[in-house]
Length: 187
Image (cartoon, rainbow, N blue to C red; front, side):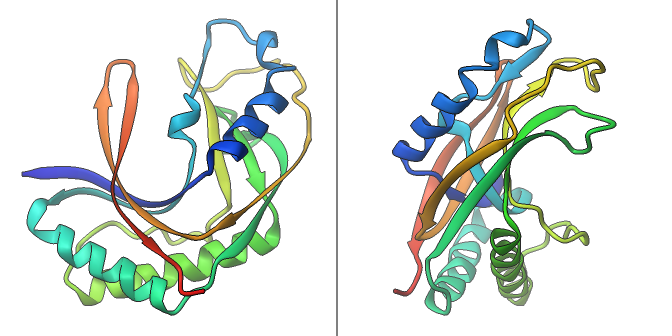
């Protein structure tokens, strides 16, 4: 059987609550043209694996364990809210991480992808450097113009302590995510 998979860092519940409190002020400025993601779906994507056969799951988990053995937990700092992927062509609202988080994410992503390829897991690698972000909302019909100003400063941080293998099930109401496996970093 095939599953749509990705490796992520999930957020602790207290961080999800802190994010929710910050976006509550400007959430009413948007009409029905936007769909806010449920807090349970908020995560940092490390690598999107697309559809994988069940037989590859042990190899994926093995790659995650290899990376976790040589990696330490990291402080992830979120600094601002922004329209993404660009201000000129916004399709989403993102919570953005700082440059240190970008470097950490890039390092973990590179290690993971090398380990996955070494185990024969096939997936499309993104070539651009990763930007630490969480997708908070998506516009229903693509790009929007004349959007309200959203609060810029976030000042939210948490300790990333491990990697999670997630399954994404696409439904009419949006994607639903289930954690299949979790591995802790070596601290």
